[in-house]
Image (cartoon, rainbow, N blue to C red; front, side, top):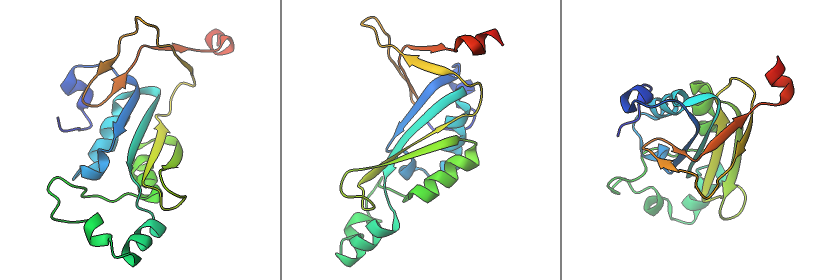
Length: 162
């Protein structure tokens, strides 16, 4: 399924608490449509968690110096990566889409030559405290754009009374 800003209407679904996207954005011709679709698929206060290979300056320089750039970013790799993301470029994409409170973690290898990265951002909205409880009877639903476990959203007593 192609992710577009109107993804919820196309799937006939309600907004989600969390959208997970793992190793997708680097394969897309239109990453802005993906970001807008993820943003629109979230409830206010919802969170996007995404991962992609990391391509910061030092990693790219190390690959080039070691003579591995052509093998790493081979344009003949059918279905391969067509976008290379750094912390800065992915942050820009998510900020443009409206996400706030961005958080970044590098993953694998040494700092600044990470293999991958995980970034999360929130759809601004009602401040809520999320409690995720996975009981033995919890249902987990897998969709093209989101993984939503049984999620209980609770507000603090002061927020409920206002």
